[in-house]
Length: 167
Image 1 (cartoon, rainbow, N blue to C red):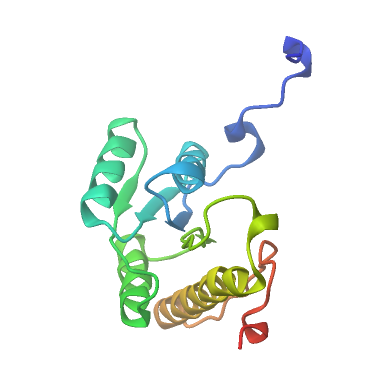
Image 2 (image 1 turned 45 degrees about the vertical axis):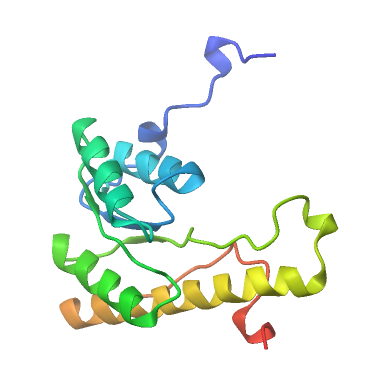
């Protein structure tokens, strides 16, 4: 059943005003990551879209820009610490800041219901994911600190497993 017009949720831009902010979204060339990048852009943020495929990053950034949003595509293999550092540095250099970090890149060694995956497969999927998020948060924090002279905090609520549990 659909909501009556008076009961509909307000549009994203009425909930958040992100004008003047910069968002970095990994895994942003399709699915949830792309939807998040678009929503952040529609709320006013300049958006860096990233995934491992440079052509996909460029195509998505072009489409977002064609739709009136401010976007830049930067390819990054999130399993490479050097590439993650470069991503954070390039994103920081583009607009001088990173205000929002969405760590959405992932791997999927098991396709199907989670209940049918072994503990080993879950660990194989989650541990690199936790490690990539931690690496990107550190790199973004270093880029922020080097440009502003300040430190930044991070709130991470989506992780099901802390990276220290992966080993």
